[in-house]
Image (tube, rainbow, N blue to C red; front, side, top):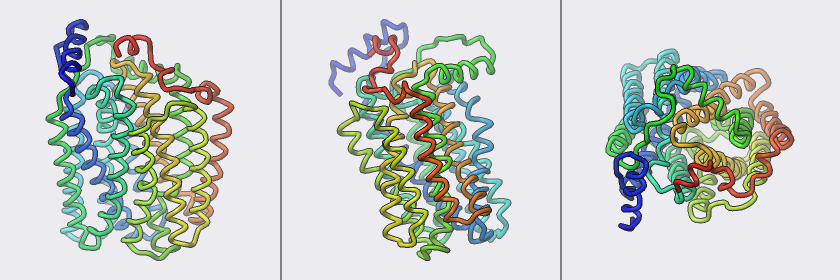
Length: 430
């Protein structure tokens, strides 16, 4: 970073009454590295747990319970965690939550060392993992604006997303390979990656949050303030809720173990490849956003992306060809990345510093509902109707949601440039 930028950062800090600071390129790269290792570990763990539990129970509902076990503690803890992040240093909260995830991976090693063949202990560890993720989500997602200058935030989001998706590509394939070697090797690798990420986060510097807002208010009042902020910004609420219901209904990824074993007959290595396909599409899209951020027609692009996501889900659900399934998952991931990039950018650009933890918590609660609760919904409907009908109906539901949200959130549809949603005080600071 140029010396002039560092001096300017210190001057701005002095004007605001907060301690001087410097944006360091090192912190951004350490953050990206920690994000890569933590997501890589989560993906390896997801493949290993999904395959192992399905191998024990042999029912789609068991896969749905994997998501539910993580969602319940996340649902209970994410909003309080957002308040904690707004009052404490999010670096410490994030590092501790990653350490909890490492501990969960070690517990999975222990379960396999003792050859446990009941799913209940695995679900109990997943509950603890969900609790850690409840704190990791708001802490990690609110940290990036404190590590880079405000004007560089959209590109930083793009690069962070590309690193995330690169790990999502590598993780499932690596998870399938490691699981072939043995579950102990897979879970042990997860523990190591989570530990590396925790150590990296603990060393981060960057800008600290200036103390402000009503610090004497009750925890409930502070949490309610974050919820009210999201509800009062129709663009933010529309983007978050659109992603929630689209992914909740189009949860094809949750049933990939069933597709790999019973429909496509490709085994754990094939499962890892299937899990990597949407991440590959998302990563290529994220790399494009890192170099060329979306500048115009933002709202319309989000609705188009959700519609493509639904069509790709339907195609995957009907496919009996491994390669067609890979292509459909690739398109699904690319479309999802457009939606994720726009949603993340809108939230980061529209949220003032004092509210980042709580707003991120609301966002993470919606993401958890769409992912983990979506896994449960997919597993439950698959146990009722069958695997293929559940995925196809979910894709159709996603298309319906996109149409309804276009009518219900016209402000989101009309957003042209991301800079339109920046609060006035944040724009002045930038």
